Length: 202
DNA sequence: TCTACGATCTTT
DNA sequence: AAGATCGTAGAT
Image (cartoon, rainbow, N blue to C red; front, side, top):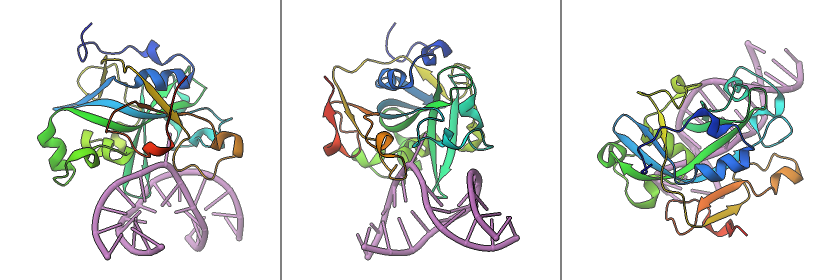
């Protein structure tokens, strides 16, 4: 199957969340005319991960996390940025993958308009920018990614090499979770944040 | 109700 | 280094 041609099935998400996160690198997100290739992700476990929104149990905000994998979990951060997560694992596990950075594949004009005319890596490096470029807000919370016509996930080209590092912005987490290597990025991609804290995977 | 703060981004 | 900006969670 050629890159960007196949819709990814919900079964893709029914695996350990770190594995799902790594395999999401290189896959394509599309919404209307905008197409993005995923270049950086973070894995968040269930209620046992003190860095995860699931750490306080089921709440109104994190409800989509507790559903079966294959849907979107979107929340508002710092009162102004929307974060796109893809829920992983079976219902009740509450794991999710944060999409942190992407490379533009289609709809560059639309992306630039939404991003205030920016260009270069600053255009799509960072989770708030990804949701903004795709035109997403919380009305997409719980959206099923395998349903045609909305926000979709397609097969892309798997990366040659992958980098790993600690997750960003989780100083509130317990020591063990804080140091876990659950951030992944495509090696040699310019569409990556905090490059210096990433190392090649064995 | 009230308060504190966040899986961020931009400008200074 | 700090301001923008508001929903959420926990406290009152």
